[in-house]
Length: 154
Image (cartoon, rainbow, N blue to C red; front, side, top):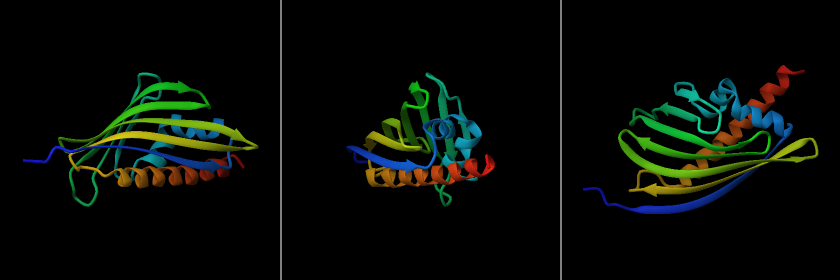
């Protein structure tokens, strides 16, 4: 029998991007752009970006169980804020439930992005440090996507 354990954790990640809040926000809202930086190359990705909309990202790591990250958008203020709730499942096992707030603040011609996640980590299926590292990797991939978008516009 699996030990039933609950760990609560909150983390905040901050990034500064050399792009306007509208450009950074659009990289979250556009299904093709979001898939490039958020989903792995072999992942399935669906995005319905609206209040009440759903996002699903499915993939496997090294032959492990199917990982399904599913989010529901609760609040969207264009170019300013996104709030969503999410679950992560490994196969049929629920690993985490979380609430995430992403804030976009103009700083000069740049954007300061602050992502705050409050998570409930269940039964040892995921560690808070793993989630924080993975989320940081996504935000770094977003920086690469913004460079690609900038290059297209020049």
